[in-house]
Structure formats: structure tokens, C-alpha cells
Length: 193
Ligand SMILES: Nc1nc2c(ncn2[C@@H]2O[C@H](COP(=O)(O)OP(=O)(O)OP(=O)(O)O)[C@@H](O)[C@H]2O)c(=O)[nH]1
Ligand SMILES: [Zn+2]
Image (cartoon, rainbow, N blue to C red):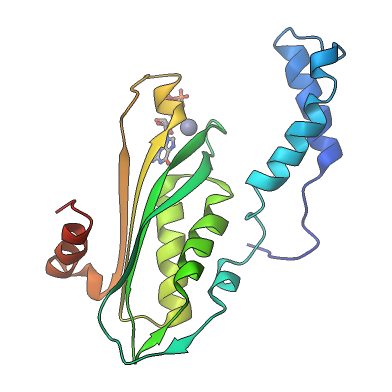
């Protein structure tokens, strides 16, 4: 993907499109309650898709050296994203684990920043899980990485098949966590094993 600062949301285009959608569903975009809606939606899209043209690696700015070569796991990181098929939210929790190489670790908050940035894109859950794992593996040169994401998809709950409460779990493992015995350690820590 071409990552440049020049990419920003075209608010005018979103506003025009929202007006068209309102008309298409039989609404009157000139009625008082809807007058500001296109501009609000444009500002909202700018916020919820703000991760689209940013490099996830930028979130892992902090690097420390510690005498620690055991797993680091930050679990229950809440996130909100949008499914690329329906543009409806999917949301839940991400659990991010890595095994440092030569004691190279990053700041704990940076793992949550990474999840946040990647979440703010239209996408599918599998890709989000993979991008978080690949970024950590590459940037920290970690021995192993395992990312588990649990989410509810509104496109499966409020419409379509309508299965409220159903959860989708995706896993991406790299390096040592490709071994099932190592994966089990993490799944046990998450009470999923
Ligand atoms: N693999 C995957 N599928 C997703 C994700 N988010 C939504 N989907 C699915 O994308 C599929 C799109 O299917 P389509 O048949 O093209 O669209 P649709 O007619 O709206 O499908 P239904 O949701 O079954 O009504 C659906 O099965 C969704 O459940 C995701 O993160 N990962
Ligand atoms: Zn969807």
C-alpha cells in the first residue's frame, strides 16, 4: 500500500455520497434533522478510518532492552473496526503476545496503539489479525508472535443471518508460536485452551 501523508479523507465527497444515500432510501436530506448529517458522517469516517494510510510500524516507536526473554502478553485490548463487506462495525478484544529476541521489547501501550491503528480501516478480521502479527514480528524481530482477536460482527447480528452473541475468533501465529504446544500456553493464559 502507498503510505503518504497526502492521503486524507475527502470530506466533500463523503458528504455528497451521504446526501445521495439519504435520498435513495427515501429520506429528505434538506429536513432540519438531516441537514448536518452528511458533514457529521464525513467527520466520523475521518476518525474511524484514520488508520487507512498510516504505517502500523510507526506505533512501535519505543524500544527497550531488558533481561526478559519470556512471553509478554497484553490481553483484552478493546477495539472497534468496520467490516469491509457491509461497512458495519465489528468490535471486541485483541490479545497480543510476543516472545522477545535478545531482550528487545516495546512499550506495552504501543501494542494497544498498534491494534487501534490497524482497527481503524475497513477490513476483515483475519487480515487485521495478520497485520498486527506481521508488524510485531518484523519490527521487534520477535522470536514468536501470537495474536488472538475475538469480535462480534454487526453484519451477523443486526441484519442478515441475525445471530446476536455469536463471536468470531481469529488467530495469527508467527515463529515459535507456530508450534501448537507454544500456542496452547497462550490460549491457556487467555482461558481459551
Ligand atoms: N471471513 C470473514 N468474513 C466476514 C467478515 N466480516 C463479514 N464477513 C462475511 O462476509 C460475507 C459476505 O457475503 P456475501 O454473500 O457477499 O454478502 P451478503 O449477501 O450480505 O451475506 P450475508 O451476511 O450472509 O447476508 C458474509 O458471509 C459475512 O459474514 C470477516 O471479518 N471475515
Ligand atoms: Zn459485514
